[in-house]
Image (cartoon, rainbow, N blue to C red; front, side, top):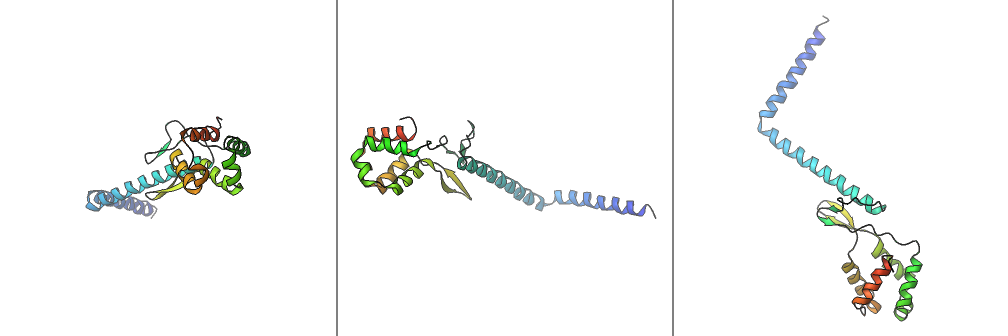
Length: 168
C-alpha cells in the first residue's frame, strides 16, 4: 500500500514524458513553437519601447548605443533651461517687434512644449515617444505663427536654435 502513491506518481511522470515526446514529433509542435517565439519577440519589443518611453518622459540619459527604437534615431534629451523666461527674453531682445507684439503666454507655452517635450507616435503596435526634429518644429512654428516665423531666414533660425538649446 505504501508504494502505490509512488507508482502512481512515476506513471504520471512517464505519461508526461511520453506525451512531450509525441507532441514534439507532431506537426502542431512547430506551430506552437513559432507562436511562442513570436510572442516572446513581441514581449521583448514591448519592454524595449516602454524602457525608451520612460527614459524620454523622465529625462533619464540614454546610453550611447541605446538611442533607437525601430531604427528611429532619438536626439539627446532636451531639457528646458531652469528659466524659460531667460530664453524668452533673449529671443524677444533679438526679434523685438515680432515677438513682443504677437506672442502671448499661451503661445510661448506651446512653442516651448514643441521644443522640449516628446511626442507619441504610432509605430506598429506600439506608441513610441520621440522629439520633433528641428525641421519639423520650424515647419510647425511657421504654420501656427505665420508672423513672425515665416520671415525668418537661416541666420535667424540658427540664433533661435542656439538660444533654445542653451548655448546662446
